[in-house]
Each structure stands twice: as C-alpha cells, then as structure tokens.
Image 1 (cartoon, rainbow, N blue to C red):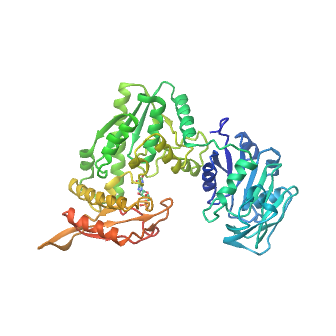
Image 2 (image 1 turned 180 degrees about the vertical axis):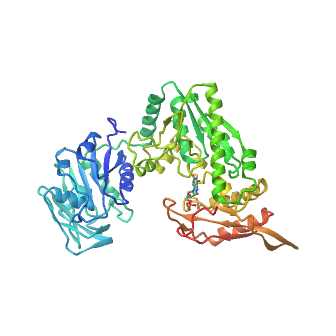
Image 3 (image 1 turned 90 degrees about the vertical axis):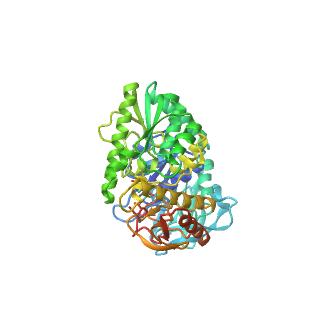
Length: 519
Ligand code: XMP
C-alpha cells in the first residue's frame, strides 16, 4: 500500500481491541495507517518503510510471562514512535525507564493533570481534563531524554515526549471518545512530532485507487456483481472510473429484495456512474427452488446455490462476448486484518454471504476497497457521486427477505412483507432515525395467525415483528428504544395498509441471546 506520498503509519497490535480503532483515528488525521501484528520483526516493519509507528494498548501486564515485548532496535531506526497504554509502558521499558506494579489501578474516566506546559502533545489543552485509562502497571520513571508532560493520581508518568528523537507516549487511550482531547493529541503526534503531512483524503484515495486499478487491469475487462449494498457499489464505481465501459456489472434479481431496491441499482446507480449493467431476472427460478422449504439453513443453502449458478451463467455469457479476466470484489480492510492476510493474500469474501464464490475461480480479483474502513468507503462513494440511498444503506442480508419470512417463501408472502417493510423504513427515515439504528428487520410470521377485528369484521391475519437494533459491528446488539410515537405510526400504517397483517409486535431481545435476523 505504501507509496511515496502515503507511507503507512504502522499500528502494532498488542492484542487489544483498540488497534483498528487507532488506525481509523490516524486516518481521521489524514495520515494513512495499517495494522500489523506484534509478532512482526523490526526488519519486517522497516520493510514497509513506515512513516511512524504506534504501539497500541494490550490486555497484558508488561511483567506477565510471555507478554509481548518491544524490540529496542525499533528505536534505533530513526522512525517516530508513539506509545499508547501498554505500548507506552513497553516503550518506557525498552528505552531504560521504569515500569512498576504499584498496586494503584485506574480504569475508566480519570482526570489528567498537564505538567511542564504540556509539551507539544498537551500544549494549551485545559490544565486538567478527562481521559480514559485502563491500566494496572504504571511508568514511574521516564527514560532519559524524555519530558514528563502529564500525570494522574494513579500514573506519576501519564505522558512523555522527546521531540528531538520524535518519540512520545500516553498512558491513557486517546483513540476513544471518552478522551475528548485524544484525537487532538494523536493529531499533534502525527503532524507536529512526527512531522507528517495530512495527505490521506477521500480524493487522494480515489486518485490512488484509480491509478492502481488501471495498472492492474491494463486493457483487460472486468465483471462486478452488484448486491445493492454499499461495498459492491463503491467498488464498482471506482473500477468504472478507472476503466470505463470495460467494466460490466451483473445484478441478480432473486426476487428477495425489498421494495425499490432493483430500481436503486438499475436507475439511480447507473445514472450516477454510467456503468454497463446486466440485470438477470431470476425471480421465478428462486421461487421454484424455494417452494415448500421452511428450514432456514436449507433456505440459505438453496439461495446461495442458485445465486452462484445464475452468476456463473452470466459470467459465461459475458466471457463468450469478450475477454473478461478480472472480477471486482468489495473486500474491506477489517476483513483483511481479521483473516490475517497482508497485502496480496487472496481473501475472497465468502462467509455467509450470497456473493460467496466458488473456489475454482477463473478470474484475477480486483479489490479496490482492501485498504479501507467502512466509513471511508461511504465517503469514497459520496465523492464518486453515488446516491445517498446506496451510500448510507444499512446492512441487509444477502439471502434477503427469504430469511425474514418464517415459513415457506411464496410470491404472495414476499409482497406482504415488502409492503410492511417499506412502511417501517419510510417512517424511520421520516423520523430521522436512520443513523441511530443499525438496521430494523421486519419479519413476517407467515405460519402464525391470530384473530383481529378491523372495521366490523373479524380478521384472521399474520403478525409482523419489528426488530430495531443498535450495534457497532453486528457481533453484539441491543434493541433500540424507538420513540412510542414512531412505533405507533408504523403499527397503524402497517395494519391499515397491509390487509393481511393484523398485528405489529416489537422484539425487545438483545444479541446475545437473540440474533439480529429471525430466520
Ligand atoms: P445475525 O442474524 O447473525 O446477523 O445477528 C448479523 C448481521 O449480519 C447480517 N446477515 C447477513 N449479511 N449475508 C450478509 O451479507 C448473510 O447471509 C447474512 N445473514 C445475516 C444481518 O442482517 C446482521 O446485520
């Protein structure tokens, strides 16, 4: 990833959950960064020609047997280094300072006292201000050459710096929102101590990726499968910007989409990008394959299998017409880091996605989002002129409404669910709640009926479930406390406008124990 303008700041991951967050914060200061494991040797780190190194926090005590250490040779390379929490202590230890287990622990919000004018990191920040701490050990003596610029009750050395050698560190976590001046402190390290220029901007990302794609694809042709989601749309738009009509996008309408989604791709995405698009209308095929199936795992298997068959047929048709050798994938940076893949490791996004591809791939992958976090992908999408409906779209499962109908999937049931779902989405958007919720599946309990009364008549209809959730990453989630007025509007409209539904119920289960989708 490194080139002359974007040499990476390497964030060394000591096993805390914070390394990716630190990398994002570095990028928010408009400096490119990558996460590397602490097992990388100094030679491997220097091979990447780093602009600076950040030692992240870690769960362990510096004294624990087997605790990851910092090789002192790292400090002889002339590369700026910033230590955070565990990384701060490991840095102090490696440079000849003292780290002790004093028995005073600090967890959570702590008052930081600025000393010695604050140095470059804390200059002109309030004399005392809150920071987020999480440590048992502490640095009691800074290494020679460092000035101590902050302390706290439990940390006699809570920040130090040696601008001459371009080294600095803090005991607290500047990357979390609970340290309100943390981003400013990180920015000062990067810009003022390390002397890096803020060059990592959305337009620089677009320029760099477009140049790379042109280099990789040459005069070849590429195919991209669109799902209607953010990642594939932005990946396709970048490749389209780079190679124009030598890209063809394939969109499979499996009939399990929500209201308006096909139009968003066929009309809005094409209008915004001018991309070549082939839509395969496979609605009948999927319905036939799903007939009589109620088991959720079996539904997923069938949908995945049919999807691959349809997509492969579309590929064969295209290959018969031209030399399509490249396949575009919207793999994101967190997938690359979590699968341990560095640059080059082919990492086909397969998990439980409908876009999962067969192993005997006859393509070279183009993955223009491999270096990017989701929020960066959205900004790139906006920069490329994609519509908000696509760029800000909430997660939606590949198997679509197929796993939100509990019971057999039929055309009629899909129509019922589509109407109810469209109403819920409309009202949530109108109430300005889209950014606050992660997603709000609407689930049709197609095999359940209950008695209702509408007008003068008795009804025997179906319930739908609203499942609004708040989450950071979908691994855990909590149910969103939606305002009663919004719930009321959704409920009234659904029962008035969707004849087959006579009850709207709210799911108030967190994850765990409940998953987000019902299936
Ligand atoms: P669960 O139901 O496991 O869902 O709590 C976690 C998140 O993943 C989404 N999801 C999927 N996304 N393909 C996808 O691309 C799938 O097959 C799939 N199944 C679940 C779900 O919507 C939630 O955001």
